[in-house]
Length: 391
Image (cartoon, rainbow, N blue to C red):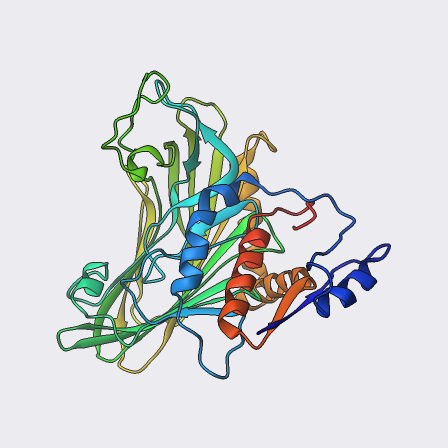
């Protein structure tokens, strides 16, 4: 049987004695903390997927620690999510592509429906074109994604996804790293690395784009439920209406921006993205788009076999609830983040997460249970904003 040991973050009173006695199995394990314990509503929306994903994740390689949740199945379900208590996002199997993302406290109020937390316009709408077709979920169904590995590193709140995309005679190695910053509650980041094993034209697309509206039920006026309804028929996220979008070229990259309001409300969410690519990208030609949906940039270049090309996509968020000039604030903050560079941003995020792991529960002799318990702690921490006891 495993042995459980608690590592308290801050101990007061008889906390040290209780940890020691719990280690011997005399008392239930618990910890004390002087800060108020409070969870952001973000976690209540996303936490339904975390436990099932932790159970379905395969054990990481022998040299990996139990802080890693890994899968080698691109068709698995559900997908993991990461967050910082303010921003949360579901990580798509391919590491790129639009997926549900939420901002804590951002609710809509559509006519005849009940209030719902709103899904934000997608900020991870990234696409890759190998000269013949775009990479999408059909590649998973066709078995064209192999070998595949996606790893959630709970120590840093970072997901790394890697695979080869095989399209006929064309093979491209794809590496994606994603985090929602724990050190900067307004920031989310994606790094995409492509290594084509062929020579020829490629394209990469980055966008901020609206999410489709849900198929609604008039739950605010219904007198009885239909027994045929499934959970997905009732539990769907709310919608945000895009109000403005812009995309411009800058030296070495592009800037994207989008504003949206939750349906039935006046609060404004502003998203601003800084997209960067190598200065020596061969024969690079970038085209922006902001008419209609989405606000995006598409970069075409001539790829050389065996060479790796890295792209970064940084996104800042601001709302009119905290700043009446939310679009300007989001733009300023993403520009400040871009000027610091990927390595500095990733290091700050990892350090902030490491500090939160000062609190831990260690279980000796049962690695599978250790992963499950740490995944529970991780998703609590990922759902708690700064200023709360867990955050």
